[in-house]
Length: 454
Image (cartoon, rainbow, N blue to C red; front, side):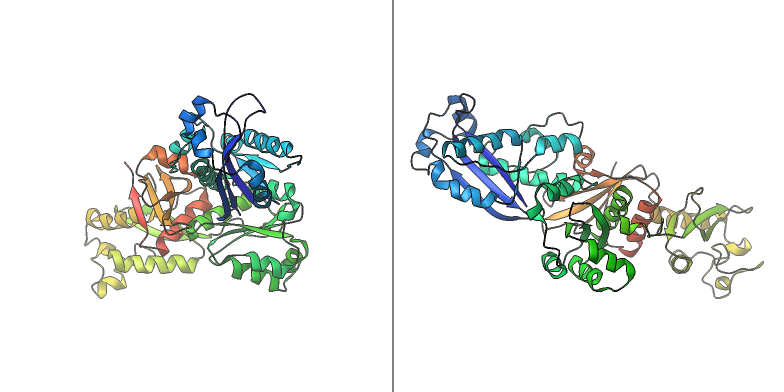
């Protein structure tokens, strides 16, 4: 659990500042579950430059509560939490100073979004909160007021969690804060899981990830892990101390994250998975007469396929439908072995490419249409899919035929700008697995929105 906060102060000499406003959002890694926002009477003068910056003046604070009146609420909302702030050292020091004046030792573990952003989003022109969130397309209101800045930090931290593909933040949080762990009773863990689409991570007591999975219903899938009686499930049940998850909204993002993070983290109980989830691929070549032939064959890493399949049967089903949709020749796609005309020509569904009756130029146009639709080679595009909330969408970026990564954007925010897109995207490796996952998903989900980029 995290307490994401922002504090406005009077300014002045080091360790003599007073708090004028505080905002704390209690965040469970997925949503805000509690919040506390209040002006505070600092019982001291506010520096003029601070008044100009924040708009908070002494008159506004005359009837505000003093720090000792809100101290109990601050202790309660931050208890068992890791403090998260933009420049956490400053906010933590101010809080500790105020509590010290009351004779109370305030100790909390901290995470700094400045440090995390420098690590996870390198190369930014500035890491000040305002400029950073603006460059990432994160909306911010009431800049230099505690509530506005804290809420912007919540959104930034959410993006940083997404970009942390090695799960260092989560694993560090579990180690820093043992009370964050659930009791190692399987029913308790199941109770905490949501029925959403996403990726889940099974941890040992020290935070080590022992298994990563993906599901359209995480709660149901965890329940299956804990009720199965096979050897692997029994070992997982024995060692799991807690389960964390990333809601993705999109099944495609979940599939890509699962594949990438298994490779990155190498959990002990994922090692039995097949190295590649596809076995067959669709290839093309020109014959001696100039016709483009299609062929379903065993996947070969040395060749560039149009698309890939989990087995020969699904490849054959794809090509059978393609023959119908694009009026292709059964002989030239490998479905009908003959030295003469194919069966389709006999029933007038083939225009005669098999016996050179239809010219290669006309026939090849239809084959190239199929290739264009089912391959994203050399394309610049964004695949838009479901987000984690009603007003959010996911974006999968492909540049010049190379998968770059995924990100999330608000419905009212334009994503046609490639520079903004690249800043919100969590980079991911482009490999045969990701290509297979994306192409397979596009085949199954024909109504997906695709934005072509110049």
